[in-house]
Amino acid sequence: MEFIKLNDSDWLSRYYARKSVLQPVWDHLRLNYTDLLRSPLFPVVFNVAFYLFCCLCYMPCNLLGKRWAFVHRYKIQKNTQPTRTNFAKCFWLTAYNHCVLIFPAGAAQWYWRPPIPLPELAPNLGDLMMGVVGCLLLFDFQYFVWHMVHHKFRWLYKTFHAVHHEFMSPFSWSTQYLGCWELFVVGAWTTIDPVLLQCHLLTTWIFMAFHVYTSVEQHCGYDFPWSTRHWLPLGLFGGSLHHDMHHQKPMSNFAPHFSHMDKLFGTFSECVRIPEGEKPVQETHATVHSCDKSEFNLMQVFGKTGEEKKLA
Image (cartoon, rainbow, N blue to C red; front, side, top):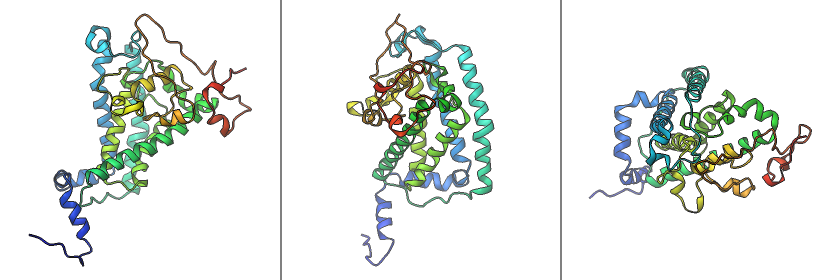
């Protein structure tokens, strides 16, 4: 039997390393794919590849529509279906953003960021879960504020965010139908937040994967029984219903993942399915807004949606 020496400064780390069920997985990755995992390009390629994979998984639902009755019964807006033109526009903008912004930014890291050292120890399950939840909560707060400000301030909305609301009924490939500025901000927070919280690299990659998946799921247009919003009680996780309602009522449901921020600041809107044969009534920024060009302050930014007024 091995005894731990109290005068060994590294005894605690070695103790937890033996207890981590993730250590064999991490050792396999670290020892067999060292150069790949240390590359500054790995997070970029990983995010893009996983995003494409998630979109392709939901694409049959968006393509088949009513012809797939078993799946169609879970559609949130049953009377809408993305067209070939919609798909083509999303493909084009996604490819443009990645070629012009994402891949050049990743390539630039070769010059200013050295290869990442891989730690020998894996995180335990508790640390991994806490890290992922912490990153999700931090990103949720950041994007909630950014999102609300860009809806409340008409110039910011029209200049940077309006492109994403071109589709009132979202579908999987509309997830990254974004302007370059918004995509840059989202990518920066996704990269920086795990660093701020001092997360293990394995925790960082799992957070990125979960963030990408939930983002695609929120735009898929379906509320399946296994959707992430059913994972937590009391509607704490917004999911596709929560974000679909945002596309119908743009001045509500600003948070990307959870619902607590919208409930705290009075921007939460109940999520409902649109029945067959009924058209949703969309609130647009042409008729509903919270500020004129001459009026913009923090009280308005964090005001309730019920206080919104029509533009003159």
